[in-house]
Amino acid sequence: MTSTANPPSPRASRAHTQRHHRRGWLFVAPFAVVFALTFLAPLVYAFGLSLFRDQAFFGGTVFVGLGNYTQALGDAKFWEAFLRVLLFLAVQVPIMLLLALVAAFAIDSARLHAAGFFRIVIFLPYAVPGVVAVLMWGFIYGDHFGLAADLNHLLGRDVVEPLSGNWALTSIGNIVTWEFVGYNMLIFYSALKVVPPDQIEAAAIDGAGALRTIVSVKLPAVRGAIVVATIFSIIGSFQLFNEPNILRVLVPNVITTNYTPNMYAYYLSFSGQQYNYSATVAIVMGVITAVIAYAVQLRGKRKEM
Image (cartoon, rainbow, N blue to C red):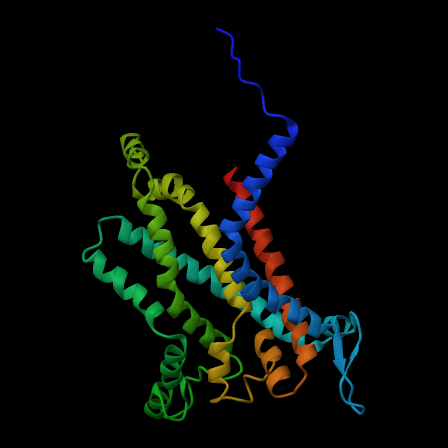
């Protein structure tokens, strides 16, 4: 049997493709508009601000190109704040993710009594608003009115000083860990629930114990979730702001206005009236955060391949 239908001409084919493209753009147009207004517009505006500088005596602003970026790269206060959050990230994030992973494995093991209760209790701090959590820990840390003050009064001398210069960063890390262990635990626990049961059964038949099953079966299965949680934690560490900024009221001499890069940008803008340089610091931190997060994501993908 021979077909008598003629193939569409190239012109008709192009018109058909263009209609498909127009329909596609109509479908994504609402999202594209919201994306442009809420994500791209602030970035473009901040980048535009970063290219200008206030004139001290004449008023107004003057275009300086990358001058603000050159200033930021040589700004000792900025790099001091950056190195502080880098140290915070290197110590606090592994501890938090390890605690979350252990909690997820314990709850998933089915050997823990009242697993549902522990799951809720560990997750509960994440449901507490961040400001409320910091205020609560601030009353515990307070060396003049809180739990630390009571302990020092009981001991007869100042032994517990969570907000001293040596311990302030550790105390902030404790708050962040308390807040986000449950959140990361939930990510790991959700990943564990989709591990194929036949893999666990096969490991048990081969004689693998609980620890061997975790190392050889469950841990590789949740590697993708660990990468995601690590990226979220890196971004959160570089955005550190609420905890030190609220505790700063208690110890302004220890937690300075440039304690973290975000605090530095905030006080440059709202106290120093240096909007252009503040935007520059924000852009630089955004680029550094994106590069490090992307590098972690690439490394995680290579290990999965």
